[in-house]
Amino acid sequence: MNHENQAAGKRLRRLTLAAEYAGQSPRTLRRRIAEGTLTGYKLGSGRLVLVDLDEIDQMLRPVPTLAAGA
Image (cartoon, rainbow, N blue to C red; front, side, top):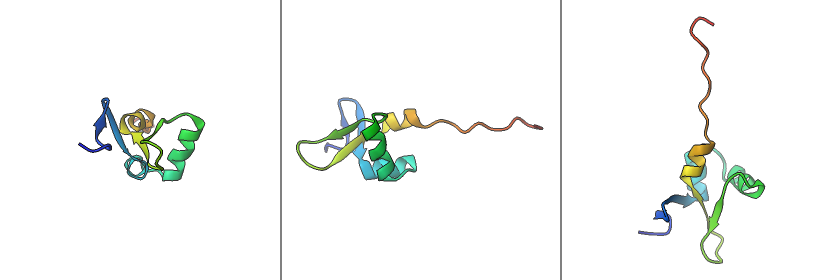
């Protein structure tokens, strides 16, 4: 199991893969990490940033649909 797989029950992925999963740019996810609305994880002193896909799932909201005939 590598560091991008489950660690402590988290679905951690590289920032670029998490951005693709969310349909966002990596820059947008970095901005969310900086503002504190998304947690970024670093492994050691490297530049690799990991993001928990479960946190991204919580941020995604369904788009409301119009009622039939409205």
